[in-house]
Length: 277
Image (cartoon, rainbow, N blue to C red):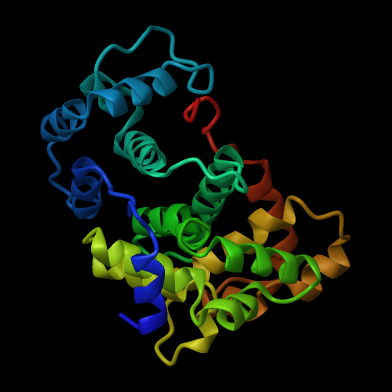
């Protein structure tokens, strides 16, 4: 770990811990023979988490005709992807403390939107590991939380610099000596997440800066841009001028489909409403 990152983690009194069931689900993501009963049993061991997942399963978002009363039943009806993403976001949300300068509901809405877009992009690019990319999109910004926890003064300086028009990654390097993505990657190492996921998160801020290109990181990077564009009042010309074209084309996607693809992604729902109440 680089010294500046080590200093950050030393300043955090209570480093967030991830539930074991989340680690297990990440390890099982590529397993074609995954046992639904075993997964359900692992989730139900985390009682608070299981209750929140079931509450969301029974919400208006899914529109189920009858009430679901068990995780295994939810898995059967909704499938592994839906339950897995609910478990991961619920489990991670439980680890984060209150922060006065961050609206955690907005944070997770943005992260969930980025994750959903990243998965869609990965599928369009036929990358073959869209579930891992979804998770990377979900957690890529946890480094920002760590910075607010360990270096609150620097976090304020960075926020102000970005507000004044400075690039966020440049600001993070200026005030901290590392980026939020590098901080997130280190947290994922401490959580013993899969190496491919760590690599994707670490490179997602600036994929083209690395000698070994990660297409997964490209997908997350583009998804982040599209998610952020939902807050923008800029016209199509400006959005195209600032669009991460290199990453898009490295994914093998047509530059003429950018606007239609952004529109498709923006119309999709996150399904996060009510989960963090």
